[in-house]
Length: 525
Image (cartoon, rainbow, N blue to C red; front, side, top):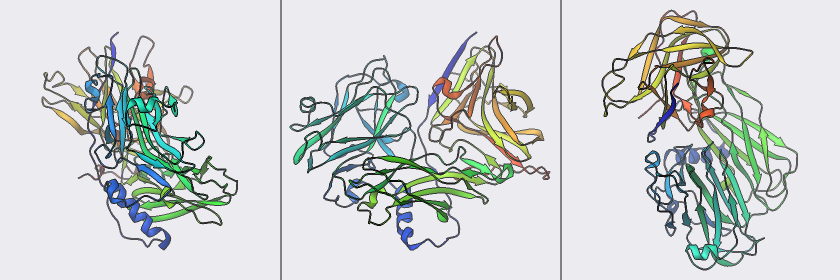
């Protein structure tokens, strides 16, 4: 039997959220919230931020699309990037994040054609440090294809010889995913009151891509609590009240960046709807948090009962002293969930890749959805790509979508419950086009878990590419069936090292509603 997993890579595009009627904000948050929203909707260059505090010697977030002024690159491997990552034109590149298109990061690839080992360096501008300085950055690489790297320090020259003249500061063979915070205490290593350069080296053999962001060299304050990272509050990007009230899981990792232990501090979760404050939830944490330590703070589940575009802002405050550094107190999670009239989706509307496979026996690609109350399924939509430059081999081919139940004992998709009307592929280029397929009659779904799937035709030259999104992803939600002699052979997409969300959606209506409700998708401009 012939089976091959195939993929395409696309560039990112942007969408904007809608505004709603204004709701008054508490004075203590109004300025911070509006500032965070503005920062997310418009990238601001480092030069517009104003001077850094005296204890912060370098703070680079790569908001400008260019390499920071004074930084230098060295490409020692001379390898050619694989066409899949052909937009990596230098040893390190400032580009939209691997998993967050709204935020720039500094990235290096180790995926070459032919395969080879990376030896790519980036060295910061000169940094003048004082006593007790620390180096901190965030990094990640692709799940299943991790990149490793090394970090050096130069106290003499801005070149590789200067970097290698001192011991390694840090190294790993496989950086984590999602984002990992890394910290090195330069003062403990004897570096103080001198000029330095920080050097990052990607030395991975046949990986994919590495990214770093928020590089900071600083001397800690006494009292400095911060927010590090947070989980995705919802496994969906769109939900509808027709299938049940969506829940937000609010969890945030906080850090004590100061020198003094903190206890009885307060963590805030501000839930925004349509860019306005909707509800504030707070938790007081009595346990002591020692210097340089992190902890995970979990809020009660937050139930949504109104349509709208939801976001979450986290904040943290000490109990009895003033936080000396407010810059790291906030974390803004935009586009957490859109509660629409009738759509459920796991993707965020940004088609970055496309997934398909060749199989003599055909198969399916699908998304799992949890239905919490009786509802009618009217349509399944999917984003589809088909290039005709080399000939439209798929022109005239008919495909459809299916609804599967799950077997409670095996946890695998099982019986086919319904099949949509067919779609005939035209003889023309199709690039990330949403195809919406009706059912001849609405499909009544009882509470339970269902798979909405696109058929994959059988044959060596028949491949349907369903678009995928990297920015939002939930494990064990996307499924592929590549049948073999033993049966359907269902696997999750991560089994094939594809931690991405399939762009397959469901369109629903109330069981008492006879007329079809048409889809209201993401707002795009």
